Length: 125
Image (tube, rainbow, N blue to C red):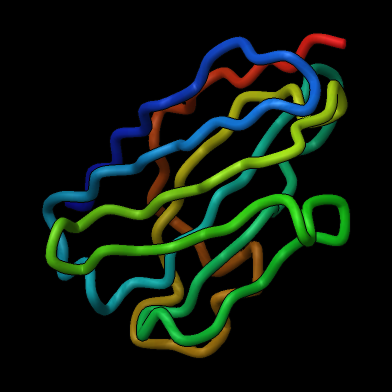
Protein backbone atom coordinates (compact mmCIF):
# COMPACT_ATOMS: atom_id res chain seq x y z
CA UNK A 1 0.00 0.00 0.00
CA UNK A 2 1.36 3.39 -0.99
CA UNK A 3 1.56 5.88 1.86
CA UNK A 4 2.14 9.62 1.51
CA UNK A 5 3.05 12.09 4.24
CA UNK A 6 3.06 15.83 3.58
CA UNK A 7 4.95 18.44 5.54
CA UNK A 8 5.87 22.10 5.26
CA UNK A 9 2.55 23.89 5.47
CA UNK A 10 1.95 26.90 7.66
CA UNK A 11 1.06 30.55 7.85
CA UNK A 12 2.78 33.06 5.58
CA UNK A 13 2.18 36.63 4.50
CA UNK A 14 1.14 37.47 0.98
CA UNK A 15 4.19 37.57 -1.27
CA UNK A 16 6.03 35.02 0.82
CA UNK A 17 7.17 31.49 0.04
CA UNK A 18 6.65 27.99 1.36
CA UNK A 19 8.02 24.62 0.37
CA UNK A 20 5.91 21.53 0.78
CA UNK A 21 7.36 18.03 0.89
CA UNK A 22 5.70 14.68 0.42
CA UNK A 23 7.48 11.51 1.46
CA UNK A 24 6.23 8.34 -0.24
CA UNK A 25 6.61 4.76 0.93
CA UNK A 26 5.21 1.35 0.10
CA UNK A 27 5.42 1.53 -3.68
CA UNK A 28 7.79 1.96 -6.58
CA UNK A 29 7.97 5.73 -6.35
CA UNK A 30 9.92 6.19 -9.56
CA UNK A 31 7.06 4.72 -11.59
CA UNK A 32 4.32 6.96 -10.18
CA UNK A 33 3.17 10.27 -11.48
CA UNK A 34 2.92 12.68 -8.58
CA UNK A 35 0.63 15.64 -8.03
CA UNK A 36 -0.41 18.32 -5.62
CA UNK A 37 -4.07 19.14 -5.16
CA UNK A 38 -5.65 21.76 -2.95
CA UNK A 39 -9.04 22.30 -1.43
CA UNK A 40 -10.27 25.58 -0.02
CA UNK A 41 -13.32 25.80 2.26
CA UNK A 42 -16.53 25.41 0.29
CA UNK A 43 -14.70 24.55 -2.93
CA UNK A 44 -13.93 21.39 -4.83
CA UNK A 45 -10.50 19.82 -4.69
CA UNK A 46 -8.47 21.05 -7.62
CA UNK A 47 -5.35 19.82 -9.35
CA UNK A 48 -2.62 22.38 -8.85
CA UNK A 49 0.39 20.72 -10.45
CA UNK A 50 1.64 17.31 -11.52
CA UNK A 51 4.83 15.68 -12.70
CA UNK A 52 5.25 12.63 -14.91
CA UNK A 53 6.84 9.51 -13.50
CA UNK A 54 10.01 10.23 -15.46
CA UNK A 55 10.14 13.74 -14.03
CA UNK A 56 10.52 15.20 -17.50
CA UNK A 57 7.08 16.73 -17.94
CA UNK A 58 4.97 18.90 -15.69
CA UNK A 59 1.52 20.42 -15.57
CA UNK A 60 0.46 23.61 -13.78
CA UNK A 61 -2.95 25.14 -13.28
CA UNK A 62 -3.16 28.60 -14.79
CA UNK A 63 -3.63 30.12 -11.34
CA UNK A 64 -0.15 29.03 -10.20
CA UNK A 65 1.93 29.16 -13.37
CA UNK A 66 5.13 31.09 -12.85
CA UNK A 67 4.80 30.99 -9.06
CA UNK A 68 4.78 27.29 -8.12
CA UNK A 69 7.32 24.61 -9.04
CA UNK A 70 6.93 20.87 -8.62
CA UNK A 71 9.96 18.61 -8.46
CA UNK A 72 10.79 15.08 -7.42
CA UNK A 73 13.77 13.25 -5.97
CA UNK A 74 13.50 9.58 -6.85
CA UNK A 75 16.47 8.71 -4.63
CA UNK A 76 14.62 10.14 -1.64
CA UNK A 77 11.10 9.03 -2.70
CA UNK A 78 9.97 12.60 -2.20
CA UNK A 79 8.07 15.17 -4.21
CA UNK A 80 8.27 18.88 -3.51
CA UNK A 81 6.15 21.94 -4.15
CA UNK A 82 7.94 25.27 -4.06
CA UNK A 83 5.40 28.07 -3.72
CA UNK A 84 6.52 31.64 -4.31
CA UNK A 85 4.66 34.95 -4.47
CA UNK A 86 1.85 33.46 -2.44
CA UNK A 87 -1.56 35.07 -2.52
CA UNK A 88 -4.46 34.89 -0.06
CA UNK A 89 -6.39 32.88 -2.65
CA UNK A 90 -3.75 30.15 -2.36
CA UNK A 91 -5.06 29.42 1.13
CA UNK A 92 -6.20 25.79 1.22
CA UNK A 93 -5.40 22.32 2.44
CA UNK A 94 -2.76 20.92 0.09
CA UNK A 95 -2.75 17.22 -0.68
CA UNK A 96 -0.04 15.13 -2.22
CA UNK A 97 -1.20 12.33 -4.53
CA UNK A 98 0.32 9.41 -6.41
CA UNK A 99 -1.06 7.80 -9.55
CA UNK A 100 -0.67 7.69 -13.31
CA UNK A 101 1.56 4.65 -12.80
CA UNK A 102 4.08 4.31 -15.61
CA UNK A 103 1.72 6.49 -17.64
CA UNK A 104 1.62 9.70 -19.59
CA UNK A 105 -1.70 10.95 -18.17
CA UNK A 106 -0.08 12.61 -15.17
CA UNK A 107 -2.15 15.77 -15.90
CA UNK A 108 -5.47 13.92 -15.47
CA UNK A 109 -6.94 14.59 -12.03
CA UNK A 110 -8.74 11.24 -12.20
CA UNK A 111 -5.46 9.34 -12.52
CA UNK A 112 -4.59 9.69 -8.82
CA UNK A 113 -5.66 7.13 -6.27
CA UNK A 114 -3.27 7.44 -3.35
CA UNK A 115 -3.49 10.47 -1.08
CA UNK A 116 -1.73 12.08 1.83
CA UNK A 117 -3.51 13.47 4.85
CA UNK A 118 -3.12 17.08 3.73
CA UNK A 119 -1.27 20.09 5.08
CA UNK A 120 -2.78 23.52 5.72
CA UNK A 121 -1.40 26.54 3.90
CA UNK A 122 -2.71 29.91 5.03
CA UNK A 123 -1.70 33.14 3.30
CA UNK A 124 -2.55 36.33 5.11
CA UNK A 125 -3.12 39.62 3.32
